[in-house]
Image (cartoon, rainbow, N blue to C red; front, side, top):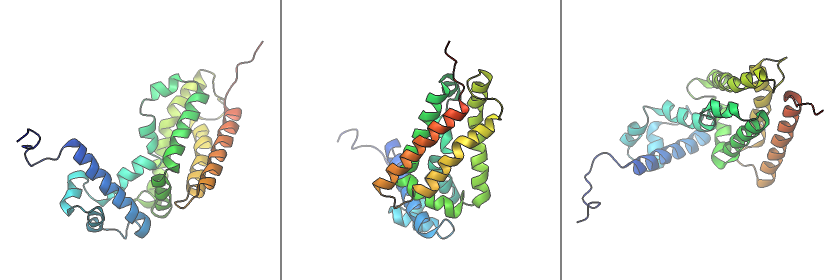
Length: 217
């Protein structure tokens, strides 16, 4: 018998752990979209994922932890995953950094999962904490992203007559509206393309208003 064939039972391999975790999150997302957060039970998620109830607790403490994982992946806190190194972001030119971050968000939010989750967030907020949790998450993401904006202001690259957090709000609020209002779960390719054009127009306008261009002699 090969070494692989002799692999003992017990803790699953890392790839198996990731596969099961993804199955559970996919099942939770589908049920949250269909029945709402409050109307979905842990047992239903396990059944939908075709795993034993105990498998959930190997990966998540409870239902709220599953919702939180989805929220971190696709909600406002996804900024944390998309720009984990603020020093790298700060070292970039503002236009390059802002466009890169916005298009990364658009790829997440326009995906089938992201569009499905938008409907869940509109109905359930951040899960157990509801609409207030969603507002708190947006504020936390805004404060985090304000750090490179402050550095760009100090370097004379962005206008400084408004606070960094206000500039972040002016950048992000229209993007959130596009996600929630335009990128519905049933959006067709044409509607997604229209949302993409809106993102492009918003970025062009925001940078025209916020960026300080060097004057050519």
